[in-house]
Amino acid sequence: MAGVAVMMQKMGWKVCGSDKGFFPPISDFLKKNKIDFYPGWHPEKISNPDIIVVGNFISLNNPEYLFVKKKKLVIKSYPELVREYIVKKKSVVVAGTFGKTTIAAFVAHLFKIAGLNPSWFIGGLAKNFSCGAANNQDNWSVAEGDEYTTARWDSRSKFLLYKPTHLILTSILWDHLDVFPREKDYDRAFKKLIKIIPSQGVIIAAKRNDTQKIDKIISQSRAKIIRYGPHEVKSYKTDYSYEITSLNKNGSEFVVYHSASSRLSGRQIKGKPQTDNRQTADGPASSADKQNKILGKFKTNLLGEHLVENLLAGIALANENKIDLKVIQKAVESFQGVKRRLEIRNNSLRQSANNENQIKIIDDLAHSPSKAKASLKALRAHFPQAKIFAIFEPNVGNRTVSSKNLYQNAFIDANTVIIPRLSQTKTDEKQEPRMEGKELAKIIEQKNKGIKVLYLEDDENLVNFLIKETRAKDIIIFLGSHGFRGIIEETMLQVSKF
Image 1 (cartoon, rainbow, N blue to C red):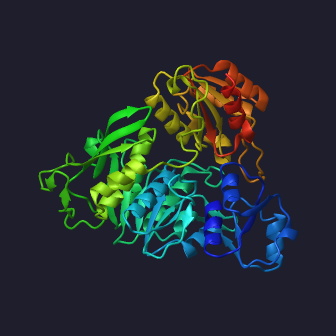
Image 2 (image 1 turned 120 degrees about the horizontal axis):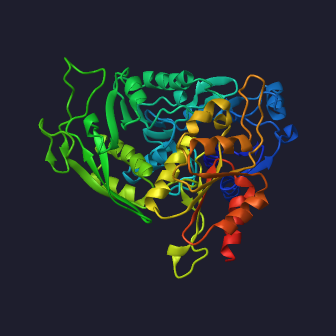
Image 3 (image 1 turned 135 degrees about the horizontal axis):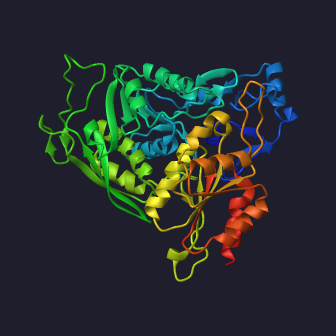
């Protein structure tokens, strides 16, 4: 919502806002852009605005919400605002359980470099942009499409409002159990999304060993289907695949392959897929080619194989829209990622001879078991010898009893996992009971054999433990969507004294 607020202000609106609390980096972002905001709920501060934009976590008994309802002011959810002011005729929507923010930010960056002048909506702070939302006048828009509900009064998934003509689908792994108590409820949201893609549209969907659910759901679409994934999944004949050639502490280098033909699911004529006869990097496509044509070589400073896969999705979309290969390569190399996605917060702390020996303190938004697993796997790949300490606070849906099985082997790439005091959230009688910190720590220990798991309720004790136990070249990673009450900053301060 912060990005949309700044966009509206740049368009000439006067904007202010409230929230239960404000945390970096969003609080810093709002201050930098001179957006007035205040903590808590104060109806007397609202006055008589033209539009009230309400977040989906707000209770229907919230005093500010009740005030604007009584005054009969214009109320919109922020997805409605995105649809009205950002979404264009050619609408790229990035959806899936993970990877949405990074891919949306990369595609917007790539399209901007290519001169397409896109509008965009990104649910995070992309380092290549001064703002996560923009309203431009050309025909392209790029939006991060969240499956979570639009508002307390609107149970539609947000992505259903964005009128996608081009869909990037990363994953369908059961998440947000607070609003999708059954896995089939979660899947149903994506089935609805697939159905609204026009027949002349495009779906670019991930293809890995765990994407059988995607396979089944997208088979119902009449849109053009393009797949992307790791090169070793050869039996699946992905249309775009990647192979990492170098992976180290400075990032990755990788090769992208493009198959000779892009299949059409649902629009095949007599079982024969329509082919794409455009040139590949190695020459014209032929019927004998399968998927060993090298599209190009790429370099990125982002950490993690999952982020290479995210970049591949954007590369596929760009190539399908005939953007020049050199432009795509330039966009990949210059893309700086998104804040709180494996973001190294300290640059030169606790050095002995050089930066090689520092303790790295990393901030990551991974607030679910699947996202934590991907982030930890990435760190282990880039820093195989490091001792990794992970401080994890899940979102509300992953504190429910039903989420227990999702923690199976999610933390096997960490050495020590710490559950801090969990932030308080409101519940109602209809929702599942939620695990407290001590119970969550026990579940993680049971489902991740050989990993040390602690519950440290006191923040000061947690910081002291990290300072006492860490050594040169170790990694401390904070996984979660909250601000950790200043623990990250305090840890950085204490480490810097050594």
